[in-house]
Length: 587
Picture 1 (cartoon, rainbow, N blue to C red):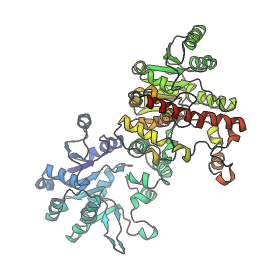
Picture 2 (cartoon, rainbow, N blue to C red; picture 1 turned 30 degrees about the horizontal axis):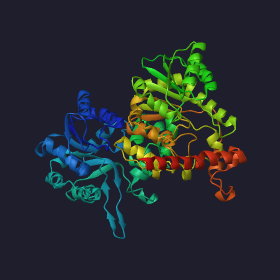
Picture 3 (cartoon, rainbow, N blue to C red; picture 1 turned 90 degrees about the vertical axis):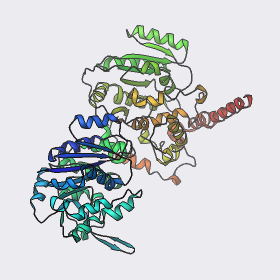
Picture 4 (cartoon, one colour; picture 1 turned 180 degrees about the vertical axis):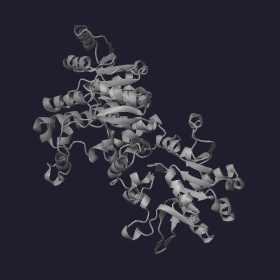
């Protein structure tokens, strides 16, 4: 069959998602000619890539005006309206769906063989009559195939010539999407859909099955699932993903990748899909690996270095940072005693582990993968809290490092690996929306300073996906905007730290920087199991049953913990304010 496909693409970040490449690969063999129309401003690398892969014949780049109907019109005009009747069918589709879930050839053969059918698609929308609302029955427009009988008719050309580039999407829907079916039917042309919702819509509350009832689409073997359904029906999305996996061979990773990039990067239904269970088997990699250990508590350094030595089967360069000459000399001695080589760098007394990492910018920039760790203690709590936290981070990010490095090698999109939530934060309600949103203004300021080109408002988030304690593995390029910030020492408060500082904001913003750079992240699986009833109990503690304070000091040392809190939190904040005021007065 001599078929034409006009394929419309749009990506708000001006790139091409992997699901689009897959879609084109599956659809291309069915068509004599494929015209790719993009409403995005793609760089040349994407254009050349599509052409080199043989996925398209013609390429049209246009302004994002008129949505898909105006873009389809541009593709049809480029082919020549008078030439369209030379094809057995003309198909228009867009990239607003995942799929095809199954081979498309049988669908084309089935509907092309039905002589009474002049155009067909995936789903239709039943008629809606209501107060001040009327939507006619229509074939939904994300995929429409017109047979020659309709393409060569005057009404077909007249319709497409009437299409204008409306700025309002609702006007496009009202004038074109909901009207073209009725227009062609009045001229004597008939349509059908893979899923005809008219006979069954009375059994369902909503008319738009593509968004609200993905299970029905799958049951009727509709080969495309709308992207919108994953964001607008998030309560169903975990099950939709499982159903697609069970019923088709479609690569679920394409859905995960696109939804992570195009929507906010932390929808609940994707979190389980981010979990990595890395092994510890020896591996080989040709990539350069750096390991950075900020060494404040020197008594813990041999423990860390021993773990590195016994766990890492790959070659790596070791960097140790600390805050004084005396500690630097002791670190040199430790390296000699343990027969290890590494660079010791004095990075000053401010910034805990985060600023020392950023001060290694020039050294770390030459490495592909970087592990960042520090001698973690939690002196504000009983020592076993810090010990449990640190040991769990060992188990999630140091002991399985071979598997993490292997994951980086296997996935170019992977830019960051963090640990799962340590058990302490599951048993205590410390991380909650009331406290977390207090970090958001500083996070927004950092975001603007980095000029990442993606809109994100942290004040609208309830909590953040972060590596508790900033133990991380990452690709340098994925966090490059943070290294390029050039944070000055005066921006960093001295110890003891107040509760909400730029350092806490950096701890929470890492994954979002990675997302803005076009990378993905993974969560290294915890080896311990805690029943979800614990989370349910902790997160639903009634405020009226808690002590009359924002912090339950029973969790952090009783009276002694409360005194430390007053000193380290509000007390140090007052010191900071006084110090800044003095500086301003001097200036």
